[in-house]
Amino acid sequence: MYQWKQKREKKSFLALANGMVFRGWSFGAPVDRVGEAVFNTGMSGYQEIVTDPSYAGQFVTLTAPEIGNYGCNSEDMESRGLFLNGLVIHELNEPSNFRAECSLQQMLVDAGVPAIAGVDTRRLTLVLREQGSQRAFLHVSNEPLDESEAVQRARAWIGLDGQDYAAKVTAGKCFQWNETGDFNVVAVDYGIKYNILRLLANSGMRVTVVPARTTAEEILALRPDGVFLSNGPADPSAVRYAVDMIRDLIGKLPLMGICLGHQLLGLACGAQCGRLKFGHHGCNHPVKNLLSGKVEITSQNHNYALSADEVPPELEVTHLNLNDNTIEGIRHRHEPAFSVQYHPEAAPGPHDSGYLFNQFRRLLER
Image (tube, rainbow, N blue to C red; front, side):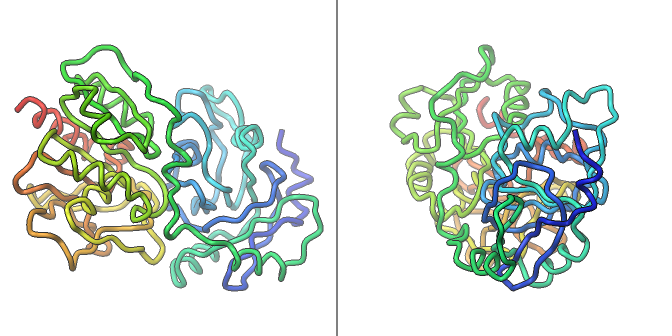
């Protein structure tokens, strides 16, 4: 259990590549790591955050001040494990909820994920917002380490740009998610979340999940009615094999993408993709559907976005982020393919974006 005495001993720290150091106390696994520091503005959902494979390679700073109150349980897992490099919070609380099966601390320790509490997360968030996401080094072990050395280790880390993290988090083999449904759908796992699979199944689809490096020929051999392109971590430009696979499938099968899948579909159609200053991470981002005029409250987790300056003529922009006008949705003008940058399965609205899975089903019905 969490030791309150440990709380008062700020022996751990997060060192940023810009030279700043944020001190606190360790409450996760006692292992040092490098990673990219980002912030998430969600007020709840920490278990869904730490089990989202899209956070691989990152230290997630939670802006909500009180974390851990409702514990963790097996039903709220979004993947088979924890893939983030570390967690940064302000105040850790013991769980007090009838659904809790373990504490957040226990989940992190069991998964070997380091974490630090007692950090001035408001100040850290302001730094990341003003200066952008930072390469960082998290020191939580008992190994003596000078803060200046930790800063140097952060600066020496290769970072996430140009790195294929989808291959690191994807399932190692093909598996069947559900046994019944009106349509056969292949879901390509670049770091897929379980609730996406649940909603595809609830929409009447029999879902087969395949690893990230599955080729177009291998997918077509499964004789699907459509293909779903999942979310995932890091830089889409590094996942060239996926871009080639998607390009081979356009026009042959209906396609739907979310997050990384959205970026990969755009790249396959000739769009460009670039890094955002500090990314979009949270469950309160307003997105306007340009086709209906409605505004959706969305959940987001990405550091890269399609460039609004270089949209190929065969693509139509369907959604825009109202915070910064970045592209949040596209559809092909001539073929049955569309995607969104945000996460409709996370349901922060809670049902603002549920229509997207029905939209995919309508493409299958045609």
